[in-house]
Each structure stands twice: as C-alpha cells, then as structure tokens.
Length: 255
Ligand SMILES: [Zn+2]
Ligand SMILES: [Zn+2]
Image (cartoon, rainbow, N blue to C red; front, side, top):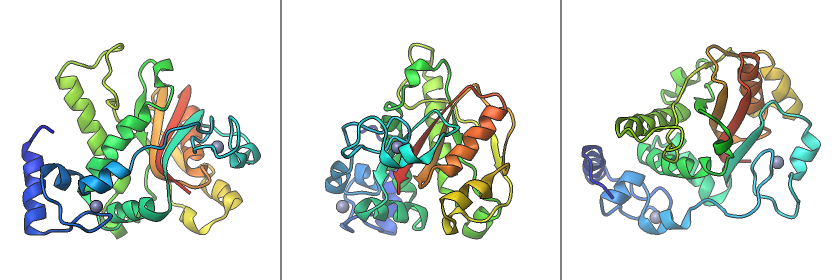
C-alpha cells in the first residue's frame, strides 16, 4: 500500500483517539488498518459475493434464474439495471451503522474500494462516458445529522477520477476501474422519510419530487441502501426526463 500524507493522518488520529476495528473492536495496528477502519482479518472476510445476480436489481439470486422474485412481482422500473453489494444484516449492517452513525470516514475508504470493484459488475463497457450521480438526501436531513454519508462517498469517487485524470490514464479505452466523473445533478424536494412507508406509499411519496438539471446521457446512480428501489427509480425517472438515455445504479447494501 502506497503511503500518503492522509494515510499517516488517519494513523495518527487512530493512535490518539482509538476507535478500533468497526467489526470486532480489536486495536488497529498499522497504516493499512487505520486507513480502512477495519482489522486485516475482518477486512479480508468481507468481500463482494460471487455468483449469479438478478438482472434487474443486482441482488444475488438464491434459487431463481435471471430475475429475482421481488423484481418479477415488482413491475417496470425507470432504471435499466442496478447492482447491490451487501445484505443489510449481521456484520454488514454493523458496518453501515458504524459508517453512517459513527461517521467513520475510514470505512468510507473501505467502501470506495468495494464500490470500485462492484462497478465492474455493471455492463459499463456498453456505455461511452458514464457519469456517477449521487442520490440526493432529503432536504433538512443533513442539517439535522450534519453528515451526508452518500456525499462523502461522492467526494471520494470524485477524488479517484481526478487522480486518474491527472495521471492522464483516463481515455475511452483506458478508463481505470472505478474512475468516473461525478455529477450532482439531482435535487430532492421535501418529502416524508421513505423509512416509515410501505412499497406503494414509497412510490407516490416521491412522485415528481426529484428534479434533474444538466443530466448526463449515461448515468450510474449510487446510494447506500436499496429497499424497494423506489428512490433509485424516482431518480432514474428524473434523469431520463432530463435527457438521460441509460441509467444504471449501484447500492452498497440491500434489504
Ligand atoms: Zn476486526
Ligand atoms: Zn431483482
């Protein structure tokens, strides 16, 4: 692992104010561990599950073929395809809670690596110049919590793209994995929190409440948790209304 100034700062911070491994609590011992907020054991145990995934929502398939059961019953979507990575249960859930509520920026570094790998599960080679679009938070949410966990990842993804651009590696045939420009082109109008609503209510709650300006032709939406997919759907609809032709999505967790 290349040592950079920010990695050293993470190490010093962990040394002064130890928080330990986000999963097992063991002390973090070196620069690599403090950078990712996880001990080496826990980090190697958490990877992207291999195997068949649903062609629509990207959840791993259990005994279904092609499309998962919820998607078969769920009707049409505005997005073309999504991929989601970890089930929102057990230690995976613990990971998101530590990131989201514990505000572990180190876990953001870990999620960045995961996102970069997971982007390869989408057929991005079919696209000319995909642009990453973060799902916007509800207005007021950030004011209350003071931290936007999706925006933090947007910043990291943006940083990756800038680094790649600097190295002049970026080109149509030579895009390094996970390095795509980020565009914050969605806006969410005030709505109720999706959390308290059922599937049908989630859909109507967001109807017309997401707006897009300056939408890219090809977008990859990203968000932290996929539940019914209605938020991604509403975002994809807004992007397509504003001129996007293809909209993919990527979510770190699925319910
Ligand atoms: Zn651990
Ligand atoms: Zn599915």
